[in-house]
Image (cartoon, rainbow, N blue to C red):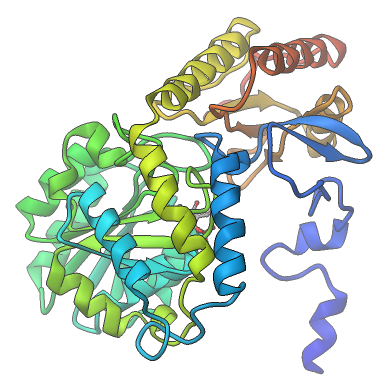
Length: 408
Ligand SMILES: Cc1ncc(COP(=O)(O)O)c(C=O)c1O
C-alpha cells in the first residue's frame, strides 16, 4: 500500500473532522484580531472561545512595546538556540522575573507551551523512572510522557484512591524516581486538580510533582500565581509550568523549579536545546504583561465578576454549568443525536454568539459540551446578549435541559 493512500480516507486521530473540513464546525475561519467580538461568516459575533482571561489581547501598551521591539530588533532576534546564539540579558531578566513571581529559584522560557510541556517532562525522566498522570491530561502531557523513556501509569481523573494505588504499586518494586503529572485547571471542563491531596500523596510516597497550569497561570490565586497558589500549596509543587498563550495573550511557556533542576532542563530539554530562542518581541512584551497580570486587580476582579454573571445567568435559564472554581464555564446540554448537537451550535451562532461544542468521547454520549471562556474584557451587554441567545435556543429547539442521559 502506498504511504499516501491513507490521506484519501477519514482515518487518523481527527479523521471525522478532517472528512467534514467545512470551515464552520471544523477550522472555523475568524477574523484574526482577538477580542470579545470577532468576525465569522461575514458578521460580528461575540466570542467565547478564546483564552484571553485577563483581556490583554488588545492591550495598547503591550502592542506599543511589540512595535518598538520589532523596530529595534526585527522579527527574528535573537537567531539561534539558547545554547548557541539565542541567549540575551533580556531572556535572563525575564526568567528571573518569572522565577520571582512563581517563588521558585529559577525559571526557563520555552517557545510554545506544547514544547515546554513535552521538553520538561522528557528531560526529567529516564528508563528507570515512572510517570503517573491524570487520565484527562492535555495532549502535550501525553506526548511528553509517550516520547520519554519512562514507564507510565494513568490514574482516574482527579481520583485520589486511584493515584494512591498507582503510587503504592510503583513503590513496591521501585528502581528510579516517580513523577506525578497533572494539570492545575482542566481546560475543557474547568475543574481544578485536587492539588492539596495530590501534594500530600506525592510527599507520602516520595514522588515529585509536575503541574501543567496552562489555564491557571495568570488566572488563579490572588495575583495569578496559579492553581497551587489558590489552594495554598504552591511551595509543594516541584516543577510548575505555565503557558503564555492564554492569560498572557502572547506565545511561549515557562517551567519553574529549583536552580539545579532548571539548569538540568536547560541542557536536556531537546524541544528547546534544538530550537530557536523565543524572539525578543515576546520577551519584551512578556516582561510588562507579567507586571500587569501581577498587579491589575481591577481586571482580575472583572474577570471573576463576568464569570459569575455568566454562570449564574445560564444556571437561571436551566442550563447545567457544573460547579467549577475556575472562570471556565462548561455548559452541558443533552442533545439526543449528533445532528441535534450541530443544530444547537448553528442556532446559537446564527444569533451572533460564537461558541464551540465538543461531543463524545470528550463527554458522555448524548451530551454536547460548550466551553465558554469569560474574560475581563467582556461587557455586561455582551453577557446579556449571550444569555438571551441561550434562552431563545432553549425555547426554539425545545431543549429538555433537565433530561441528562443516564450515567452523567
Ligand atoms: C493544558 C495545556 N497544556 C499545554 C498547552 C499547549 O500550550 P501552547 O498553546 O502554548 O503551545 C495547552 C494549550 O491548549 C493546554 O491547554
